[in-house]
Image (cartoon, rainbow, N blue to C red):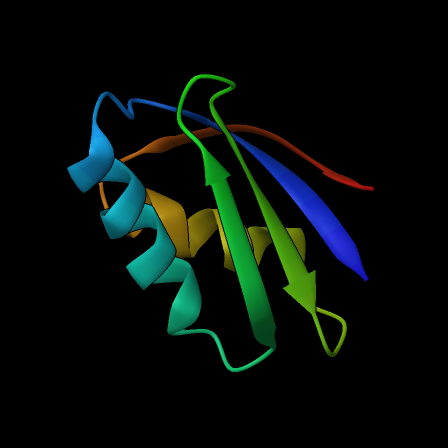
Length: 71
């Protein structure tokens, strides 16, 4: 399963690394692609994860989640 997470507040490569690190801490996440220009992340999951859990991980890292959808 893959989900696209729309993220506001990323402005540089450091932000991308920070978002990847926050998502990588979730055991269900097996792959992460962050698009700085598109302001989103695509996460590949090996189990069902509540959108709220993904949102919380990113918001605790200091960024705003504006939407999550399956892709």
